Image (cartoon, rainbow, N blue to C red; front, side):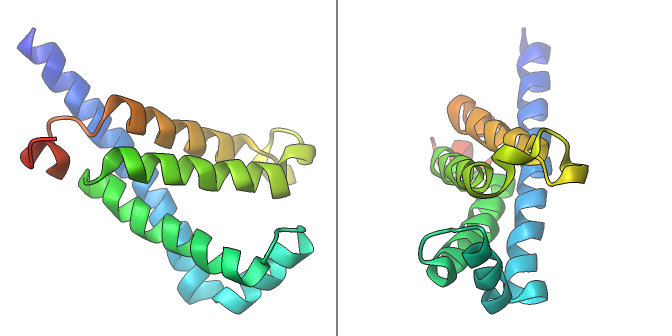
Length: 135
């Protein structure tokens, strides 16, 4: 039984780190590679409300919640925020493009969003700051 629990906790850790790294990379890209002004302009083109404010919020959520997911701290909150972030990306950008990312489709945002929500639902696992703090 202990071996199964260890495998489950290791799988959760791998999922948290893998998903978190992708979100951190996208948040970093929005802040430091593209820049928030450019991202805001892109968001405006997609019809996102308050595009420059939303660009900063989205970049911050992806960067900070991605780091939290990796570390396993405030995991349910981080996962939900990232799931909502991906729901917005799905709705405003990807929903009408079909599933394939090569056509700006929704497969990546769905995978990342449901993955983040799954981690939020099952928790951070034993190998996390949440668990170390008694969560």
